[in-house]
Length: 240
Length: 386
Image (cartoon, rainbow over all chains, first blue to last red; front, top):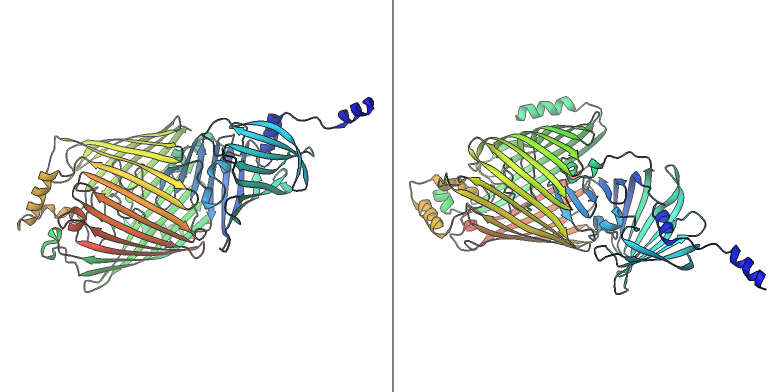
């Protein structure tokens, strides 16, 4: 009996290190440095969808730039993130304006922080919280607690596939009082650019039923060589 | 200049385009006018109701080798007995960008620096925007501008410009400052704080030193912009006096729907009570037309006649971004001037945007805004993008 228990114990997958798993999961969609094209669809009950296309660039954990390319009404608008600062470029006014990280990105359900801080490992302390099946996938469950109050959410729950891909499947965002604000599902796994990855991110609002925003990646270049200067407000202001 | 801009357009039109953006528009600026002290005996020859009708064109072409050409302009018909047709190039420039380091731009262009939302005291390059409706498109200045970004945390802008402010949205041409201006602006990002230093000077204007700060605290974006210069820009001459202009404000966004802004403007050159009384007395003098230069205030004039102003704006998005409503207000604390600008924007599709803004000027009869010869304004704009 004891040998059977030992055999079962050895056969069970070894629980991964929570931080290592989180780091692998957060690179699932975009790598360390990337240039991408994205379509954002904002869905609101009883109202027409709002569809915006954009080009984006990401470098490291804290530099990101997104420029709207369509529709004409929003074309040229740009968001820039560098460390803790976020700026908005208003093409009509030709002006750079500072905005908050928790502000909604482009009027959808993602915040600026969600878009530009896809890496959670810097801001949160992860702990392994068990195994669960989510969206039909066997997953590791990670419980992330904020290191300080400056981040967008106080607690994040993250489910990561156990099949060796380490793709995140679902993320839930909570306030300090434990209220769920919204949740993110990552789906449509397939090849895009040089590798296989989730291509569709859908954020749903837990407080307003039916409010949902989709980000569909249309193209990703993981090998983009990006200069740090393109992530500066000075470059944004120069109208490049 | 306009002939050269047109020639540039024609020359570039057949070029192979990497990306092209075209937008056609319609604008109507309706004003109810009055004979005030600033328009004694209808000196400005205004009709009781003035109507400016415009057809607008925005055209941008991204060309190979880092080149970009931009044109923004309009054809305007002033309706009524004085009906006349004119056209203006708001912007007509060519830009060349080398990597992420250097951008060179030459031609008529906007140079909209400064963190202030309604007032930008550090900006001497272009005409001050109308604080009653900062969303109106600004007229550019004829300039050469070089932007260099040597480090991710620093950038420098060098500008040489010819000041010839015109093309405003009023049915008369205000007397505006002219001359040549040179300016340098160095911008830094230090510990998540924006810091910019400005030096500018030139002919027919005092030299100016400016400072610009911006920082985000929680969900509030704070900004402050200050300028110091010696010698008054408004009458009467005060050549040896040092003046300060300071703007401080904030921008706060709540969720996807609501944006609030607030700004305070200290105009050190503005008139105190005694100076204001002297100014009003001068306006009443039949022989003294000197102060009529200020007639355009606040539509396309200077930064203001008073000393203390507060501006606030509330903007709300509805219907998944189709509707945007806003109310802007400017209060002149020195004389009780009040301006209210309710507005609505409707975007039935991603290609079409319609804006309707109304400006109502309130306050005591002799306050700055009530002295403006233009009272109620209705500004309608429609743009169709391709």
